[in-house]
Image 1 (cartoon, rainbow, N blue to C red):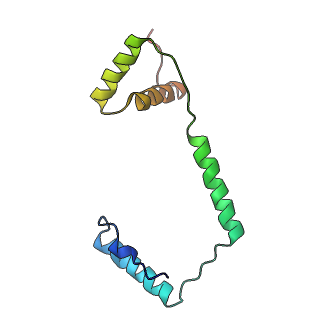
Image 2: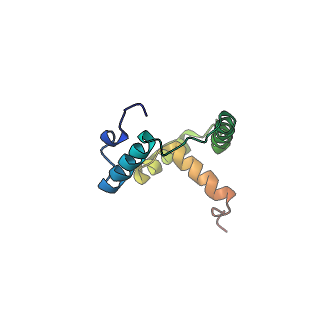
Image 3: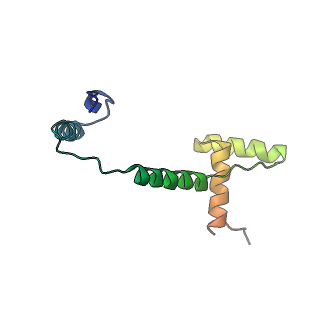
Length: 103
C-alpha cells in the first residue's frame, strides 16, 4: 500500500468501519491480500459502468407556457426540490402508469 491510511480520512466512519479498514490495510501490508483484478476484467467493469451511466439519464428540452413553468416552480419549492426533478418525477409516474388523467 502507499502508506495512505483511509481511516484518517472521512469523519463519518464509525468505530466498526474504522476497525474493518485497519484490518484490511494490515492484511494488505502483510501480503495476505492479492489483487486478482486483471486489466481485461477492469476494462470490462469500466465498460459496464459507462453503459449503466449512459442509460440512466437523457437530457431533453421542452417549451412550457410561462404560467405552467411558474406553477411548477412554486410546487417544486413546496416539495423542497427543483423544477427539473419534479418534471422527471411526473414523467416517471406517468410512464409507470401511476399518473393518469382524471375522469
